[in-house]
Image (cartoon, rainbow, N blue to C red; front, side, top):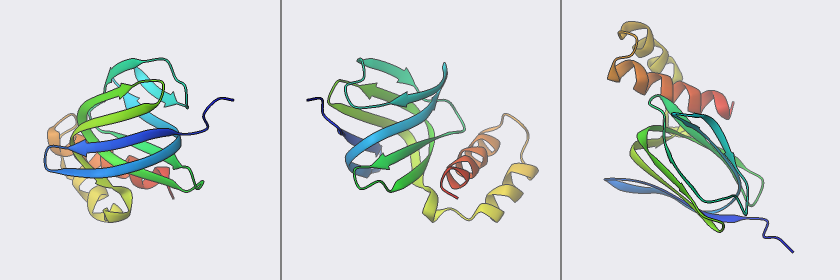
Length: 125
């Protein structure tokens, strides 16, 4: 019988943000949105600037993280998200990020960071 979960680790240079078992992961890569299920074919993908990662945990709970840059490594039994920076959606002030998005120049680092954070919040609202 096929496994129903895979091991997931989300890390950035300064912290290990998440470690646990997941049933589904969805991430924006430079090649488009990617969904990962248990047993997925191995791949290495570049995370898109201004993207987010949405995880469905083994319990069925859905969590989202704003992710600014980095890579996604997938094997048949585990996924590693190696982010330049990452933050849980639950820690984000959406109204402050909306104001930051509107004030920033499109395509700038501040714009992409605010967009990433708003995507994460929207994914779990």
